[in-house]
Image (cartoon, rainbow, N blue to C red; front, side, top):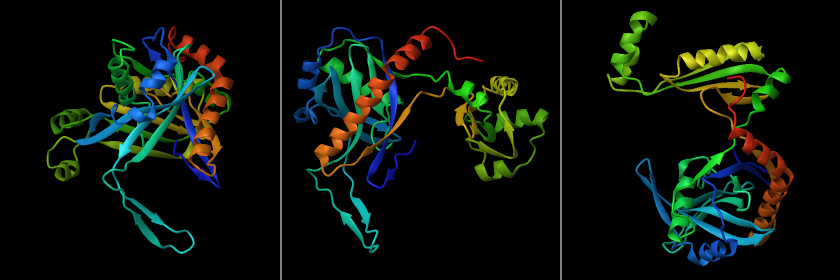
Length: 311
């Protein structure tokens, strides 16, 4: 999901998100007025992650086709190191005390259908985490647009596994991440599993630890319905100790203990200046949303009434 640059293009990874509970009778023009750029610092929120304070805000740039065009903003006070491709000369752009780096996650918000199509950007606010919900909730409450917590919910992809099986995708690798495990637990398990090597404990010095395991297959296995069911059974039996059980295939990857979410990738021209750059980004998001709206609505309704297939 990394954003990459190809020539003068930028890739956007876009996730459709439903808002729960549904927000009724929102006035887009009032939201535009409250969350416009001049209020960006009044709307700043502090969220602490790994003991680091992050500053987030929201800017609504304009309303188009009754959709709110805006961005989650992470404000950073860092310096920028650069290197010249032709000369390999390096430089440092010093960001002063009154200037911030804007790291944006762009979105369009369809308040009528209670949906948002948001950009995934690891340098900004991650729309797939609770941070997006927290920032949105706080600002809705601050301006009396809502009086309760809301959640941004990504849409599970029910078609992913079916497509991989249909296309005879071949499993190339597994990745297993175990939950926080301590020495007494592992020693108890070792009585039955034969885990007697003390090397791990010597390194960890008897502290709790996180373990992960990569299993690369020399002979890839074709994913079939029966083998998928077998893998699901293995994951279910071990879900108490496993945090992640990822399966990597040449047709797509998925986590047996989690859900794969629907997303779209779009390439846009970077443009000649900031105005053109943002116009291209919002235009691309609008195009994707318009083209996929019917499908998104169908998936949203389906995810609210049924479970993932083949569980």
